[in-house]
Image 1 (spheres, rainbow, N blue to C red):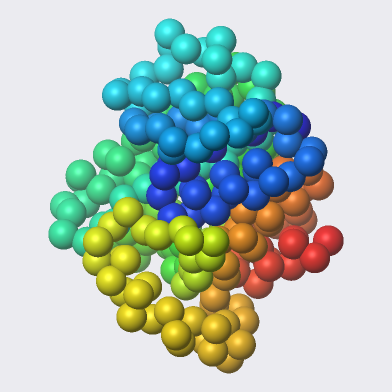
Image 2: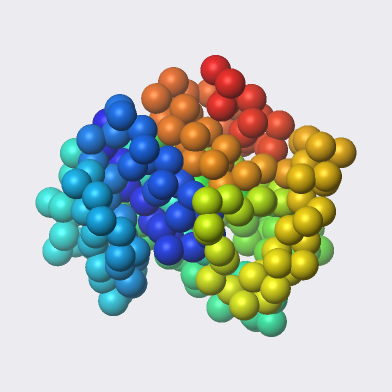
Length: 221
């Protein structure tokens, strides 16, 4: 299996890439981003681009893949809706539309979040934009799945690139195992998300929108 990983330098993306490189069924894991991950692995190929909104000139490099794990995103904190939508919706759809042309029918897994608003009409800005993004992806000629994790526990030395999140996770680290035990349908690890994406890419899932409990359920299959 050949997979593309967008956002491989972020917290979720790091975990997903790690599991891809460990999986014996993955022969190639190609990352696409503004910076390289710096990883060293014979299965790893890095595509570094300053402009993530244009892919026409590198479509040959994006052809022949079985799945795309789209982990790229930004925090909505302090952003105006138009700016957040330009990144969250606009960039995601540019990538998905390009991949649907060169890899029709490929598996496309998008990292959304618990609380995403599928109606697109709710009062929470980020949830509306994520909902619009999900709905648009589901209309493309891709086998699209939406992952909606809640609280994420980083493992294997993985850290968030966002300073505020690093501080938050640092403070919460002693409590995360307890929260995971007390609220199993609210907390996932970076390992579980990566393994779940691979499981869905290989075997599919009966739902296209996966909440935390669905994501965890795929790992045991």
